[in-house]
Length: 64
Image 1: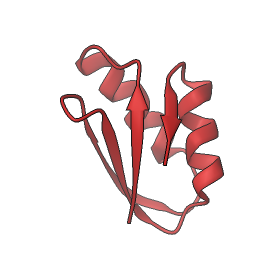
Image 2 (image 1 turned 120 degrees about the horizontal axis):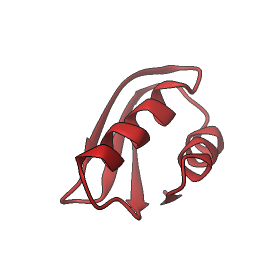
Image 3 (image 1 turned 45 degrees about the vertical axis):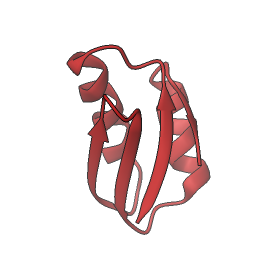
C-alpha cells in the first residue's frame, strides 16, 4: 500500500480525476482518494514515480 499526499483538489470532480489518473498506472489494484485528508491510498504494486507523474499530468501536485 502506498499513500500519497495530493494537493490542488477542491471538489469531488477533482477526486474523480485523480482516481482515474491513478487507475491508469500499471500495477494499481485499487485506489481511495480522500478529499478532506488530501491523500490517495493505492493498493497494488505500482511504481511510486509513475503514480506521482500520473497525478501531476492530471493537474495536481503529489508527493510521498
